[in-house]
Length: 506
Image (tube, rainbow, N blue to C red; front, side, top):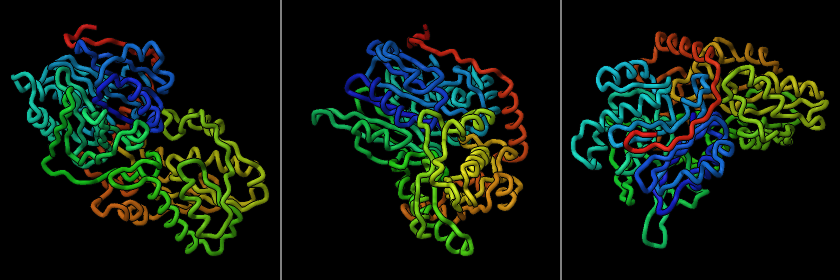
């Protein structure tokens, strides 16, 4: 899971992209990058490992000149922390193209060979995003005329949709042309577009992973980019759009609403905040129905994604709602940290239990989901250490029993606490006196109630149903092998700070 942003402005866009990336920081904390096009038609790039505020210093921002730019924050799904994997990526032919990508391709290895054999393009990293960029570039290279027309670009994206498989929301820039954005035919990963009118004359455009990035820069939310749709905005601000997929369907990722997206975002016509309120209502009703004999003194959320759901649960159960944990906001999300040991160590640094809310009480803890169980186990140990009598746990999401292949770091089933375990076995493993999960049908209703046009949701982590082709036992075997290999590579923490010229010189 990553975050992308692209802006075509009337003035320098470096600060705007920086600000947008800071509000998308929850989507990835491993690396960040920005590339702009300056007045001499040169790419200006800065990318490095770390948070946005650490990657970009004053000297970097001064170099990132230009009215057109894209940005990316990275969350690795293969365990690699090399800065060579940081985005955006760049190729010098044709024209000069930079691209940033949120999601995960599921046929990367086949594509890597194809790119070399058919287009003689070398892939320098293990990133699927670099593969995607080179396929896009090779399709654009088939048009002999200059400049490219909007139809040329849309035809190339149509071919990209037919070649690659998986989840992708992309922003790209083409030297001498403008900004391009496109979304996979299932709309798995989110992408929105907005505009801002300057002095009642010129219009600036922005695309981003979440609408909150538009909000903080005062861009007017226009709409979601449709599944399979492509957007092309020229350097002088002309907007073109076209459906480029042969059979687009809405299958947005349900986990965006459970965990990843900010509550103040509007995604696929659905308020993330309202969906979490509904999750609490559905789960509260299930608890009231199935746990009639359970004595609960207080309802306490495990911050922060579960707070809205926990408040509704407390209301339905007519129990006190309390904030029992104090959070250190300067520690990253444990779930998206690349190593299991790092996650375990970080839990205690991240949260501290307020003894007065737990001592001598039967506590119902509420979490948004339970993935590996590492965080839950440590939190329950902490709660018991401050004197809780009974510790019950409710998850606003169903059991996560299957790997995710579309950009969330859940690629190995054996790492999931619910894999081949019953609810009772999961409760025993994490140390809960009792455990309850949201029903999948109820979770789906929480999203669809707000937008009936969403007929399907991508729920593979819960039901094991993958909507793209080729996801089978052989695929997972190869994925696990690749993941194990990456874990043996020591991370290189050097940064990349380049000025890239459209002639290919550095």
